[in-house]
Image (cartoon, rainbow, N blue to C red):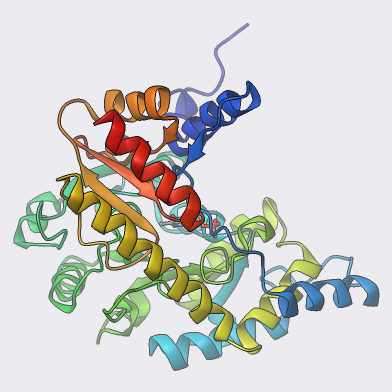
Length: 377
Ligand SMILES: Cc1ncc(COP(=O)(O)O)c(C=O)c1O
């Protein structure tokens, strides 16, 4: 048989999913593995959201919906983006996808032509590079500052005539770092000077500890060149609902909608009613989860201090990103095989020498995990 897609041959499977699978296999074989490798809130979806979805099902919202999403949800997203993120937005500048991941993929397809370069700031979330590659474009990696995890002038060295887009992610998965105003201004200036688009992944915007979140789409001159991506998975513990969205100029949204029309059509109709309830309903549930993450974060970082391990800023998301000695994949493997704790090695984020621990696990499990890691060390 002739070879399958050469485009996909160059793309590695998701490292985070692979590690979680290995941990699952060990668990199935009877080993008590503590999985700190997956980026998923361990809370149930708030009940008012689930109820809204069930109501929608009972009302018979089980048919095709408008391609970009149900009007109520487009309106709720546009209002949220204007009020909270200070980005001018009308409902026709929104497209709802099957998770932020889908919106990121569609954004790449919508903007990039074959051979275009996209700058990815490392450490970077595992799916940016494959999304760029699937769109036939070329990922160009650039490291954030190694201590501050901020952008500096060296970014300009990566801009060429072929550069079309820069991807920013704040708060960051895996580092938890939040890009400050200066970093975002640098990116905005470069985008305007070189006619680039920025894809801003803000999926962790609600999970921050003592800092404030800034959207690059709100910077002067950035309205038409920013694709702001967000979703429901992390803020509302809705990972399995597969609901995310992008906000951008009508032209970009039009292109994303073309991709959507010929692939997913739209996200599940009744799930979108849960999305409306999430955005329009009570928001205390977010603070309750955030506060619990903050408590766990304090415990994990204190444990890291006690073990003499250093870590990235951890100002947002739910990850401790920890510096390790030696090969990070070997370290992660050792922690899994000897300590039965699954973490993700930094190389998966194009950033060797680090490992990522998710503290989206109960306090009891985190306590046990820390003592196991300490024993391995
Ligand atoms: C940085 C980042 N962006 C996007 C996503 C995708 O989220 P969703 O579940 O909405 O597809 C994740 C999920 O882990 C993430 O960590």
